[in-house]
Length: 326
Image 1 (cartoon, helix red, strand yellow):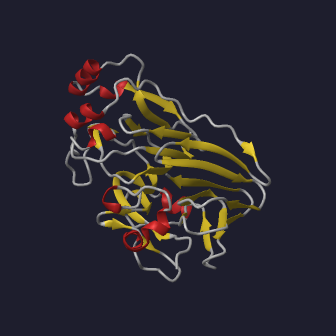
Image 2: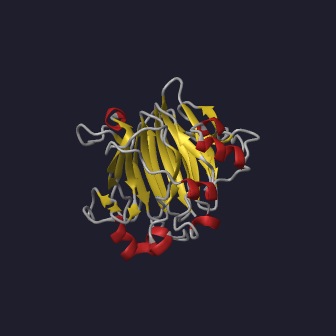
Image 3: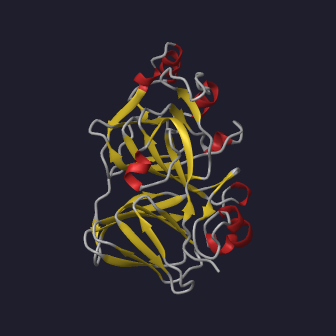
């Protein structure tokens, strides 16, 4: 009954968003709105992804988790309340995002929030694009609090230049912000708790200053997290592609696979996987369902753990992320 699933994206308007998801990936985003996020695989309350094709088209990921969780997850652990463990997005930042933090697992319950560890894969970047991640070396909590009060807290952040293909890992508690001119594939825990420290003194879509969460932020920030670096991962060669390990974490693992020429790869083992095509096109099939998922750049596919002998056929000049949930 189960097969490789592609879902209808859920679009989120954001004050910092734009139209790049339409230009780069052909997504049918609402006219006249600054779309900052496309939620590609989501099992959030009120935001459950809808299956786009195949015999189960129209049913939600929530339904899959309620009726087929064991087949979907395999050995992967669900999120709270039996929800799908990951949330996958594409972000379009035409302006800077707020300086923010997500609560670590040790503080989340106390703060009535959810922990959120995530990774960013830079899909497109303006020539001068940057991320704000972690603190500048030597910044103390007292200095940080003082600069919140005088409106200069951005001075405390470690700023790092990025380009397409770069990856940043962000454990819960790492203070951060996305700079302007970036399109990012985001893989994260199934959580939507964000505490804003500073929002560049701008107003939201309702023309009012956006809410800040100073007390929660100060309780969540790792004040020993100085100047983290981008993921450093070298490519290794396989039969007809190259690959590199981007993330190895108790929550999820992520590899990037690059096909310069058309080729294929078979996925070993029974794992819950997500494929996110960052460039080119691919077809995903298995020997159980007989259904083929056809993906283009900007598409995501959920591969249930129960599917055996899964094969990905990639067109020439194709790259994709392969995510395994733990």
